[in-house]
Amino acid sequence: MDGENNLIEMELREIQIKEDAIQTQVIVLGEKGGEREFPIFIGYVEAIALDSALHGYQNARPMTHDLVLNVIEGTGCELRHVMVDDLRQETFFGKLAVRTPLGNMELIDSRPSDAIVLATKRRVPIYVAEHVLDMVTHGEEEEEQE
Image (tube, rainbow, N blue to C red; front, side, top):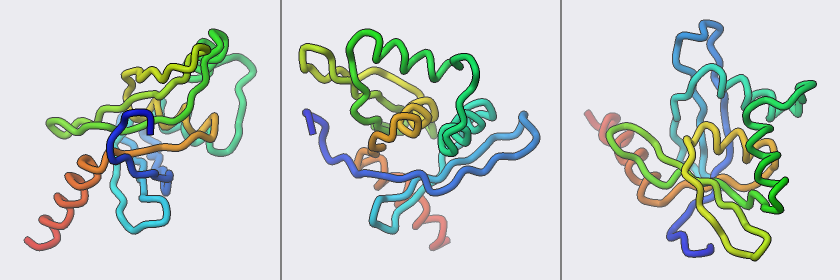
């Protein structure tokens, strides 16, 4: 996959939106065709944007995620997939994989919540690095054993 190692395709399995915008919102990513899944805590604005993207709702004017896609596509690039590629100190890190007009693949740093909104809007794959999936599912297994 263009130089990325051991990426597992995921799907958005759940969005938990709490009415209190101050509370942390939750999305659940699950292994496509598999059993492994894990939550990611996101902000209220990102949860609403994700829910809107999932249901195909379009605002009259471009919102921030629309702007990002407009810039990517306006420069002749294409969003190919997104990934959650690291987990450090309980924070997930992500990337946008963008193909340039010259055919190069560029990886652009992104918060996973924003990347997942963009992937949902463009219906491109969401990947998680195998080592990240191992860390989050291993941690769940440890908690269950205690």
